[in-house]
Image (cartoon, rainbow, N blue to C red):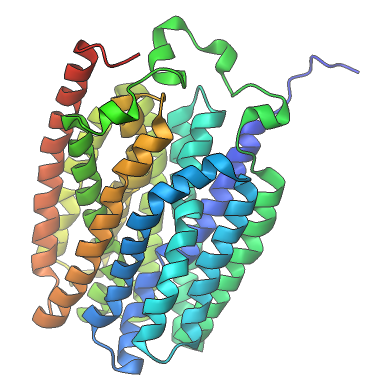
Length: 419
């Protein structure tokens, strides 16, 4: 009877659904892949570089399909796209458990990549932009943190399962588990836009004239103009390097096992990585709301130099190793959190989906280059030291790119392109 009683805005239910979907899919499929590299290569007699080529194939497919995915999300029911996406992604991951040849990984990496685009890359930033006009940074941070929360549970569990039941069973178990959680979650909580529920976006009635430039969808730089700007190319390169940095996460487990740790320790270490991701995602989301995406990103890149120093000097110390990997996970959280926020800060929300889907091609290209390159370097040298040094250089380069990107934005605004 009391219609004035304040209800929970449906935007928070959408966020809960996104957190479950992204968290389980990332923690159970995306970041778990590295745990299987050493057991599979040893069992099937496949070289680390040869097996890791499936990451490259996934990245090529991602690069090709990203623009198509952006258009499909504006045309088709988001729930059907996400259900189909998780079946492709997690179902393909489960199929790895039945493979006896490296060609199986190459084949199933294709549908896995297509599904992953919708489930773990595109859905969250687009839906959060649609549903949140306030607390945008917090919402992005919570979504990215969910990957850390579930990863902290699923990664150690996967390591123990590989040790006790083998990598085949673990692939299948994780794939089925992800589908069983994500499909009902999507059906119950996900909607593309507030209008489908007869609502306004959260905070739409509280947006002031002072912050409309960043919060209102109609404000910003047109995609056609953005794609020709220095700011866009700097952002594209930033995405390339931050993804190359984050790609080392797939090799944390092989790195650990290569210096004498076992798969159970590697799984626990990846759990620590996931906890770092969780804390980092929340911290970066909150920080970006307070000091801006630019300053937060610079802080993240500078902090990333700490684990590089630790891993290149005292990796044999298990406590130091775990601390370094946790900090590394904290920094890598900036990929999911700061990527969308930097895009919005640089170009606004006017044609966000088109600009973001183009800029994140840098993520796909990084996967094509960095992931197999790391595998072949490790295979040829038997060491990960040179990879760690390269990651350190990329962190420094990214700080320079951020300065260039925001100087480029300033020129666009001065030219009257922000409207």
